[in-house]
Length: 378
View (tube, rainbow, N blue to C red):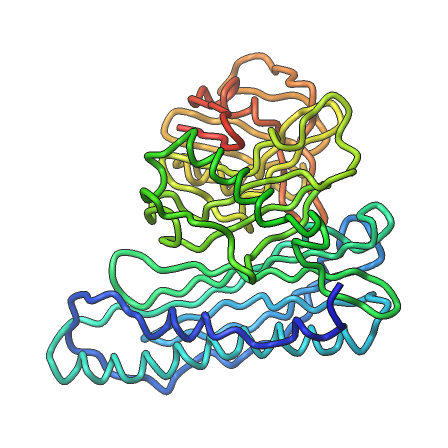
């Protein structure tokens, strides 16, 4: 593996995204000095397994020209404290640089809008993260985290960027690379897998858009597999979202009776691919797939209300109504008798409620399909 600290270089991808605004209509706009002060509040979000813990440092700003909502990961528990400090420094500087670049751009663009008499649409930057491997014995000492940065600078939609950090948690921490996981022929192995997957759904990708993974290919490690990820527009149209390809690691134990390569890892709801940060898919030892309730239900048009006293979520969409209660395998639609789905709703360490995938097909009567690692719900 590589010498420690080699990973600690600040990417300029954020700068590239922020300077490539999509043309749109603009009108009178004026910079405002009234902004919400920066908040740096540690929010506990422990890793479910392993010795490493991650908490969120919240940075929020809002003016009439832009909004910023950053959840910057702060890592604790790596055996190599020097490496940990440098990694935390990079994570914070990376997020703050994206924010400063946007603020600089918004000032220039707002002034230009005012000069030319066009309407100015407020800009936005959001940073979220997800821990996929906790760095403990259950993960073979591997720590893996993905940080997603969403930037909107006008136009029809914004752009997301995912930065990944994979570390071997030992006394002298080392960056984990794909060749460490798959051997010297890692490119041939991974390229073949990706090409085979693309061939199954060629219409979802650019023709000849994938020529092979890069030397610095982004990936994260999850449940005994490496997930190769690409940026929007890199090998596929924007509608495809952030393409991901899951490849089992050699010599890794798999879930009994399950093939890791067939585990679903992508959620598409009403034609929109949900973020890997907001829509992580879980599968238990019995093969039951569970998904985050809020992100999927809201994408289907449901309004959700949390009842703290009953530890339950109420969902409503027109005449449709149901309630989901933590720890209770009892699902109802309107006033019908409760139905058991074999798995009760559960709340993870980040406060997200997960429900079995069958909840959306059997209770909400949505059209649910699972194919080639993608779950589609309509």
